Image 1 (cartoon, one colour):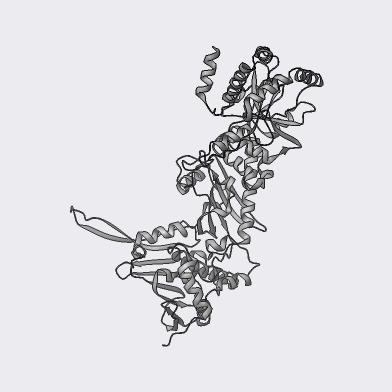
Image 2 (cartoon, one colour):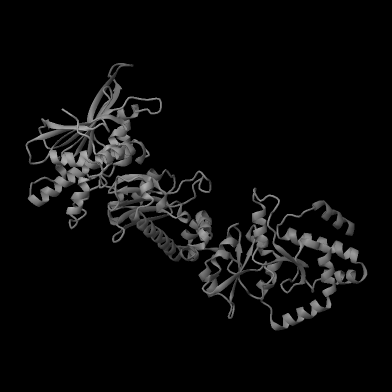
Length: 628
């Protein structure tokens, strides 16, 4: 019989699909099983309409593996195909019978009819592993069966054949190994069982196979005998499609640990079904601790993505924003096409709608936890708070409105973590500034000279200990109309009018001394000023402008900072009420050379208090010893 040719565009698509659409060859089994599931859905639907008496209990998929002859078969007792359908569905690639069927039955309850394959190329994934594919099929209610046979792009044949029962039998003749590809795996029974478990565990019909087991023959030490028994390979009912009331905490936790290879129970779980513009089931988990590689380049984010219980992608990164990359779990949607590649998913409008909904669901759950279970949220924050803060800073602050109410910082007043909202409710009357200070640890920040006066006056300060903190707050700019300002900034204004007048008077009286000290320090400082924020400390460092001392430390510590490390415009502030001030005044009048030495020592001390590197430790030590 002369072979029929695929249409030119179909031939090109087949060649492209075999070689590039699917990243992993192993998904061929997923595609064929899904097609079988569709065929049984169609028969079940027909039975409901016409009272044929066929129930789901009558329907099943049967697999065989013949390793010796390199043959795999997939058999179903679904609706089958007649000659015309065989030509239309298998002769024209991207012509999906399932898609047409679903369009014609859009008003039917999705729980009753849930057709998976809608793209029309899934069947041809068989040619990624098979050198020849044979399809024998007989449509329910018809007498004639047909045999479709093809070896790929060179065409196909269709002829009548003998087949006792309705349904479809697909036979794959597995390719021989090449230097580049090893196809032996697909002739192994254990491999086929594993692929069913991985990709098709939640197909609603039983997938059965005669499984071989070898064991020692009774009464012998080295003789084995093999037995086979029929085994159902899939569980059929996914946990995420069950009602929450049917499931226990233990069942959720065991599923999470087994599925996502964690030893500990999850800290937070989210089990939801969303309908509307984006229809999907989601089962999401937030781990109780960060994975060991979480903050490394090796960590790969993403949720498992299913289409009607069939795995499409193991880690779909497009479903999660980076700031929620710690979330593990899965999404199952009836609205996504099964036969879809990673590249095509990136442009899928439905996937974008689902991702937006998932982000909102996670955010709302975290807000609820923050409100209702503070201890649990603070444990979460300890593990993943850094990622939330990175998210606020990334993408030029595009996500700051989504994340600002999830932030926690240590409070100088409360001596514990606080939200921005809680800080604002405690602000002094008339206070328009949210104050913060940055440093390596809470203890070091608490001892900074710049915090003394504010704490004494009863102002609350947020202590920022992570490198990203100050960048994140600068991106946020304000919260509920209250501006953020570092206490290490030179323009912090919390003085009374009386204090301002006194400082101005002191400045006028000592302008010559300040100018001498600035001259002695040269380009190390932008200015030397009288301070209004110091109590017990003689000096402190602040900065002019948006680029802060903390930013200089962080950017300067980066390995690629090079010689052109950015510098803050440093201001040396002097406490006019400290004993050292009178000494400086005396030296200005009597020994300007020694005043320069004092200025440099005080500047270096202020640098050390800030935790900043000093240029010449030896010179500093020599000057201190000289004074001693």
